[in-house]
Length: 314
Image (cartoon, rainbow, N blue to C red; front, side, top):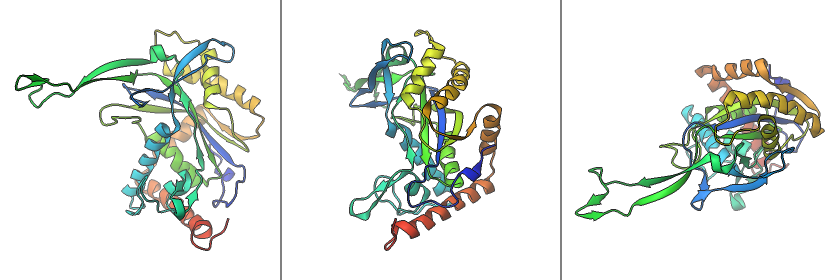
């Protein structure tokens, strides 16, 4: 299945040109809230590469994708007792755990580490008009009404939500990881199911992996992937796109895009082989998970001692 010999046996100090890509379709399974400054982020772009009509798409920024996945990974590390209490997300970095080393950190005079996981803004496959809905929300009192002592509450608000079954084609690129650290990143993607704001009451999203590509360079962008899928499917704006329809189209689009990229592909894992590999990842037992994470922790600690700790030089 996945050729783990492609990955480094230890994390290198400098870029070595070993890229592992996770090509996926992020699909909402409920009403999700992806907004900044009170409204959904949008972008005006071409519908496809053949269909040049302008289209407004919902934009899902990088941090709205990577932050939930990082937190899922940190939760798993903490579950196995492999994350120091001193390492606090967006507060203080330990600089040596798989989260810090893989996704990067910046702590002012305390140093920084560039992320080895690249992600970019994802765009909705369908247009903004058919992909969102505005809801009016309220905050009732304990008796369930909006009034108390004869006064009506003003705690009513409206928010723009992404509809269920909206697809965001996406590519996650990792660079120069070991096999265990790539497995850590992939596990975070497969385990994370809630994105955006109000994740305790919504924001369910499922990540459908369409391909894993090992290559010597970066491959196609999220926007190009989205536009090519749009050309292949030509979705009806009134109906959601069936997930299997999108995955079938992706199976045709991905090889064509890779052929245009000009990078040398070491392995492209798709179809039945990919399904078998992902099933093996999902079915890994407790002991296997612990062993994999312990290996990732040991590799990160070795990298920290060699290149980040006092006296280490890259």
